[in-house]
Image: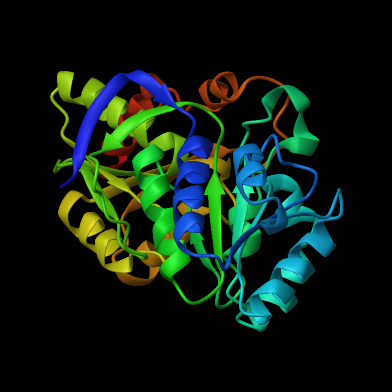
Length: 319
């Protein structure tokens, strides 16, 4: 277990992504960045300054963005295709399916400012359907890191992995959960906290909230296991089945619709292998309104207190 708590300091995972990308690019001339008029929001400004010939800006044309990335990969380059997650997936899903996944192109799709990170811009900019869309596509690994350390590790892994990847990266500040040197493994969940009464499974911005909820539950005499499920596809079926067997109830939390996301993937595994009570926390099948990401997560019952309350309700069902 490589977990620590540093709730006093928050980090933007985009910084970890771009610093890691730059470090790798300094060693590997095949690495290129492709963006859609999003140099600022993708934090690629320093990359552009260092390697202007290796930053391709296609403008606000996401279908071209993904197609160019696929072409670069087919030409032997290693493209990191960066765009707001809502537009990368929503506007270019056909190209992700046909040009990247179907062709098994070595493209790294980086969905920036995912979930409800663009909260003030409203429903058009929320990316709460992307898990559902991309996890249905064959060949495509889907990853949502929980903190800056896991983001750096997942970025390094993505560069070494021969195949298409979707990295879901938020701009909302989160505390460190992992220790330096953490190694990302595709399809492997991490235990953030041990417990026997139920399991809370989360990823991305919800992982640290799940750990805080477990602290609240501990004060009430309830031992909650917390799993960080950074890989949505391929999901860690073994860890899910073991959690269902050991704790008898599973609560999932994600910055996504409750339909088709990580919670749905967990419920599929549980239903087919080890049926227990499962409750999914997320956006409840509506267009999320305008508001900060923190406000919206709280409104949808995903504050630490809200997660703890849902856990208590779930335990009552189990009994």
